[in-house]
Amino acid sequence: MSAQGRSLVTGGGGFIGTHLVNCLLEQGEEVRVLELDGVSVSSAVEVVRGSITDEHCVRRACKSVQRIYHLAAYTDLWARDKQIFHQVNHAGTCILLAEAAHIDIEAFVHTSTQSVLIEKTPQAELLDESVKSSFEDMPGAYCQSKFLAEQAAHKASRNGLPVIIVSPTLPIGPGDSHITPPTRMLLNFLNRRVPAYLDCRLNMADVRDIAFGHILAARHGSIGERYILGHENLMLGELLRIVEKITGSKMPDIQIPYWVALLTGIISEFVADYVTHQPPVAPLTGVRLAGKNMHFSCSKAKQKLGFNPRPLRESLTDEITWLVQQGYVTHPLSLNRP
Image (tube, rainbow, N blue to C red; front, side, top):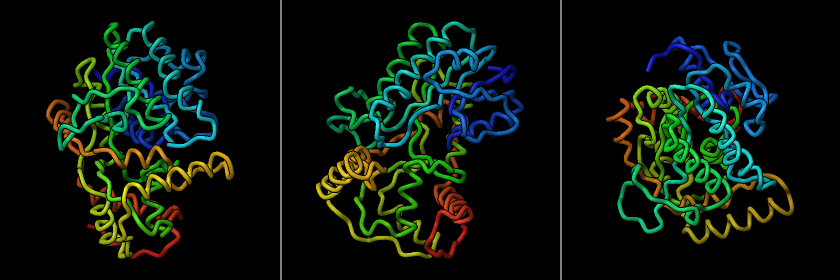
């Protein structure tokens, strides 16, 4: 695939989207971004302001593009209005796919999520792209909406649209001004808001590498295929020990059982829904995901796409340094760079 012509990035002002836009510009590509009013985007790109749910905005954004990177999504695990998950993540994806079917494009990279790669009955230590999930397996509205969006992307690929699906694991690194769930989790520990933890399975990769992985998927991915863009598997307790070494600050060492975390999530979300109307400290979807196997084999993306992410400690150090510089960390730290 050539790098000539224009690329559209939906959600180009988000965490991964911002880094993807920067990667595309560094590759010398012409970039257009579809983004909501009020969301900051690079001054070096053409911007179409509006929602992925607005057919007219989507039509304007898709005009004369050769590649589409679809990252626009509602990524929080909780929302006061639960319909927003379906409206943005599923219906918005269907609108974009329908419009893309009317234009001649080289590649449509659909950003899915690790959160839909769930085995009802775990069969392997490491999950991969062959996981067969169902709607009933999805723990919460976010996962359900992203599952349906991915199913729509698969259907579009079977109908002839050059769709490649990427499934990022937890993105970490600098620049998360929107404070996505992985960064919020990290901040809760750095600011000592959480005295204990559930020792769940995680897979993490640098957001800059995940962004470049999208470009690799457009260039080298096979139509209709899914690629997990992840890197290191570890337990949350291991992550906290790494953070301790980076920051010189003691992290929690008290583990709680899953049932306690689940009960906390149920209560926390009830209070958020009916009392405070503010995001819960422990979103129930996040707790339920923490009870799943989130360790992945990322060998397919590494072998087929040339995906080569940097070490986890480097990514964590860069993110924590950025969070400190931006004033998000209120507890004093003594950073030790690798």
